[in-house]
Image 1 (spheres, rainbow, N blue to C red):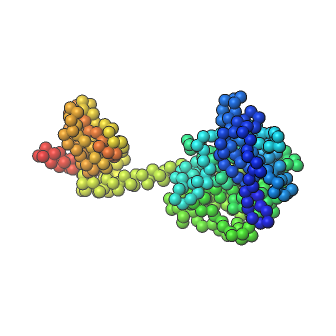
Image 2 (cartoon, helix red, strand yellow; image 1 turned 90 degrees about the vertical axis):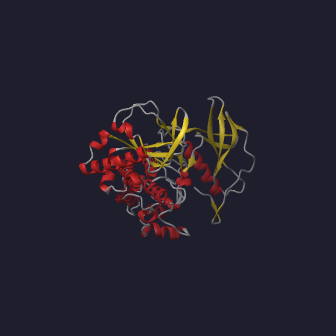
Image 3 (tube, helix red, strand yellow; image 1 turned 60 degrees about the vertical axis):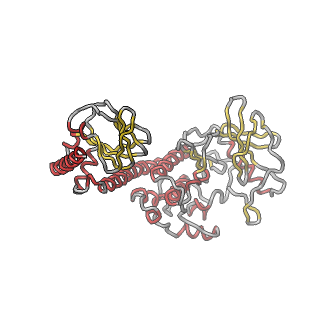
Length: 432
């Protein structure tokens, strides 16, 4: 909700310094400031915990209409105290008026940041994470809708991403509840860029309007752009009502077709063609998440294949043979200083060093090194013997670990090429 006067947006400051405490809540520092309120980090001495307290700002400059809107925002949000209990909705713990100060107390999550930080093209979330965020929001909206609450202002700024990657919906100040009442905020409220046609033109808000807004958020998380823009409200209304957004894959080609289909359905002009419930939206996102995970794995495997085929060991291998060995072996990564092979171990693994550099150590002394494309562990591969040397990562390394049992499961042609190259490498090692 933005406060407007004479057509221009402005932030109204407090007309006097914030109090040092409100009842049992001791104000510590400011966390954020909006057009109608300021949020402070506070300490609840009675419960021994930190909380976030939103103070609704006041000023003599406010018109009677603006003052009434702020009063309704406060009472509307205060009504939510204890009403919504969901892991992805920031709970409202308390609310009240004290010495003409209206406040709402919320759970404080250290390090949580608004999702709007990930709506820029150069700072996007991975596709899978964007889907996970939208999935959790859809489930949270399903819960809120079942309690008779329509949020009416779903946007990245009202979604928090915690340090551990979890999600919280916040700011139910303009929500519409089944209880109704005189404190409901009416008219065009919320953020127009996230509103569907019926909300922009007729001020109709239903659960479908929340889900449409979530579709806009998902589009923005995936592409770094909003689907519709307009310099004025009228131009935006025309875009939302009649224009088609740029296809998601044109802006980010890694987005799978199934996920793009979900985004397109969520942005349909007609409410009846959109998702009818958060549960339905979440179910499709769950399938898209699995598809995105499969796509990520395919991309990883393609990159690993590319790395292998450029190594000297695989120079004479046909592409299908490289794929067979990649699938038969184990791809492992080691950080600098980690031991890949330990002296004295019984191991029948053969290693191809894909990237990085490893040190060969005997009795704690470094006696040599190997670089990408070279191999080690051939003696253990031929016969189970104790390793006489340790192999330690001198930097971050990637290796392909192969065992005789794994190679035996490959095709005859693949086994033949492998043994030919293995013996060639072994003879070269012995001669040196």
